[in-house]
Length: 294
Image 1 (cartoon, rainbow, N blue to C red):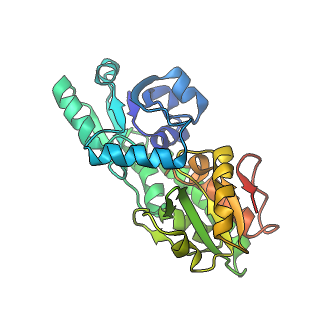
Image 2 (tube, rainbow, N blue to C red):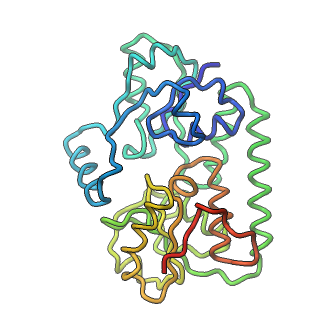
């Protein structure tokens, strides 16, 4: 089966299922594993925002969305040339990836009959379920069951390690300019790691809030996990967050690698967060995953 992934998390799922050799097309943001972008055909492009500040990125996104513009460009000719059997996309967030409707229209125009599978999880259990959904669609259902079983075993190990320990109040900042609180599956990660998420929206879309709203529940720990950034970028943003949370312990996390992409590495994220919340009860987080800022 020839697979095309139109979002980074789906690319990670494909490789976790051992289907990397079947993947023929990816997006310009698919950076895990590194071979995904270097060895596959890039069928979705977008603006390079690496030199922009979070505020500039927010302004760009809002301007594009209000004008009815697109944040991503589908290279339809390249997609047609790959002749895919299965295309993995999403409708959860127009800021994060190309919506499935764009793909359907392009395929109709090109006369292609690829199956389009939209992955739209809202909670951590939903995310785990999508691994089996992809495996089933790709014709390898047992691989999905095995992958999820292994991840659930790791989550159970964390749960056992932190059981009975006090749960610190944890606020997650998903964006800093303007501030956005944690939504969708992110609060579930905090609970799984032995914390109590505050100022959060479990299972619902992340929304813009004020710093006062984030600080009101008096979080003991603040995690800065900006979408689109790995650890170094998260650290720079976390430094600007510190003054808004006097007395709290502020940490930066590799947001793209461990928190915001709904893929298998969310369990790595739970383990890393547990190491912050309950040091000594679980193994320390690996290098490059988290950093204490203040």
